Length: 267
Image 1 (cartoon, one colour):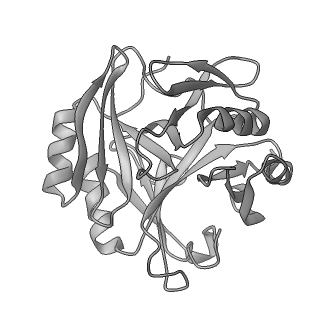
Image 2 (cartoon, rainbow, N blue to C red; image 1 turned 120 degrees about the vertical axis):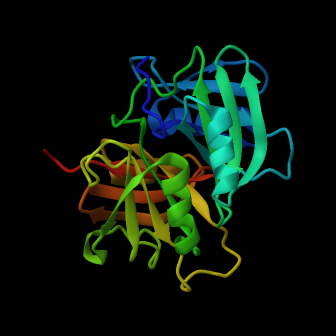
């Protein structure tokens, strides 16, 4: 397993009311196979190669959201938790050891978007990315960019690039008009080094819509993936459309967790 640079997205999992139904949906959509872990947790492995790509977890508390969560790598989780507090964020779950796999924590940015931290032990994170059926991108949507932008730069040392509105995605009719990309410390900021980004929730959306992270998975055919999601009991929130980085859609699984799929442009 390749090690992840500090602050890189390194893992994603989804909390679901019905774990077995989740296996059927994502197995049908991405071709994932599953291996039961400790407790109500199932590792997802990619089609054909068996590499780790994500995990599904059964919700232990019905009050928890049915949602995908994203984790950022850290080599010092105590330091990262301290940075979160100093930058105005909230620590939801203090660092806790996940057996020999590593140590995790959960936090929220000043706008309320929730994310995780992962300090690797025996498990680094994704065993593949940017291939069909695996993670390829994440971005946070917020109404408080003036608080959120410095937060991520202080906590993760991201270097930022603001995109021209004409170059941004607009998956929901108003979310992509103001977009910032994050590049790791020590890199030249820009599209070639970006590991995630920040969009804005505009007044076009209901005031009760909370801040959130959107997790993307690569697919070979965006339109076919959207059709498959519906056939498997999910729904399409944003129909497939073209962006400078390929073709994307925003989908919900059959239990309500939303995510995006991205078909890279033809080379």
